[in-house]
Image (tube, each protein chain N blue to C red):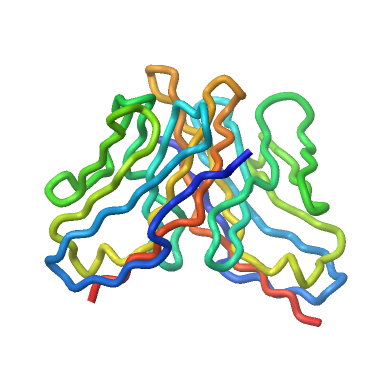
Length: 115
Length: 116
């Protein structure tokens, strides 16, 4: 089966610009996650979707970050405006809730550099 | 809230030597524990997980981990390191929501360096 797809793989922008990332989860996976991984740290959950509904966005900086999963399949994460500290790898993961405790499948990530 | 501590941001071993990566967790409920590996410029890949049952868990690539409740530990081991094991390793604990959903809380990672 195809894995989690993300695009773009790399993005360089200047501060105060906007950027969007796209994720297509594994087919049939109802749960989708966006993580932020800053260099030298573990992934930190930004937002979790169940189908097209938000389960947890407590760690999402809502003044500048937004995410949607309108049809319950693919998802976009947007940053507007970007700050220097947003430089990180943004990982998307998906999970089939019926397959047991939290085996999440990760995409390759999008590396964002904010100059 | 649950948390994970990984001791040692870097671990260096020689090829063929024992690999030991340490992970301690904090959880108020029986935990689900995971080890993920991340190769350069790639996403995370599940190595192994503990949910219930046997406390010694075997994973891919010859890795295994033992859940020790009394020590709140879930250390990752491999008897003989290979050059291809060089990567970043993350320990994670699954945190439960009241709604029944789960999320992963990751440690800060340990970079494994393998020398010839």
